[in-house]
Amino acid sequence: MTVVVGIDVGGTKTNATVLADDGTFLIDRMIEVPSRVNHGPPAAIAAIAELVGLALATAGATDRTVLAVGLDTPGPASAGGVISQRGSTNFAQEVWWGFDVRAAVEAALHLPVIYNNDGNAAALYAHQQHFGHDAALHSSVAAIVGTGLGGGVIEMGAVVRGSSGMAGELGHVHIPVHGLLAPGQPIPRCNCGFEGALESVASLSGIQNNLLPFWLTQYPGHPLSDVPIAAAAKDVRSYAQRGDEMALKIFEQQAQAIGSMFTIAANFTDPDAFFVGGGVVEAEPHFRDWFLALVQQHTLLRVEQREVAEFVVVSDLDMAGARGSAMAALNAIRP
Image 1 (spheres, rainbow, N blue to C red):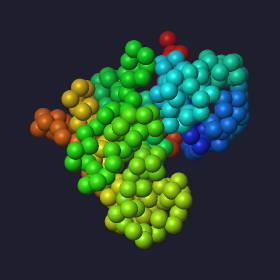
Image 2: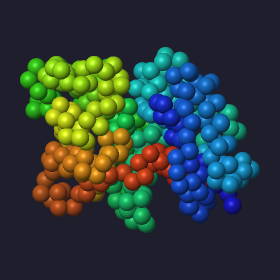
Image 3: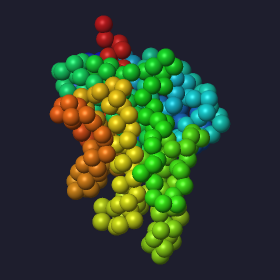
């Protein structure tokens, strides 16, 4: 048996999976280590090497059986795995700007490395899981909500990369703010420097930097007022699940923003499916279903599109990136 390893690098955790050459995943749970990206490239690459050994041991495989590694990181990054010269939400330190993460991992592991950004990897997994053997006959658009907002566009079963590899960066699509913001609410600013980009609203960083500071001024005395803003931002979802009015307003804005982006996407790619993944739907069923319904409500489709388009939660949410990376690696090395 030969295998490929899929690696998903995040802002705080890096997780991995192992995929046999017959298409069977050999790991059915999260295998992860701290990503250490805030400690710079050497520490993050060392964490990846450590994780590969842990994943192979968990799968009952050896390094001699590994044909290739699929790697994903948060974008923006080139198709070859070079982090954007402007950095990104999870690679904010200047040492990462323009860093060739794919080549560095390849040198450390002595194996071929196939790169995708994390949104593309999760989108590919969601697409193939949902459409199965008919994946090559369909198209989809995915929004993956996390620390930032990852995205992916799949056309006829394949990731759309673009000329520089930065296609599908849906978090940096400018969305209309008219009708989205409350009276007096400042235009949200994205970590990339854009104003009104989707990620500035629909992400954990968007909550922390833009939405929560404003809404706390509208709800004086709210319990989250006494919590440090970074911790408070992470607590907003639990408050929303319990029906807290202020928290629900924050997630209403996020759902509307994603719907606005899907509306834009519907007019240039007309997909069969719209996927939503990430922390915002890793929630209790009543909240997840409420949020997805709001996204669908705010996605303005023509009658013909609404008759055929599906709105779907990404399956195997935490593992989607690593599994999509493994799929991409296996696809790349198959004859």
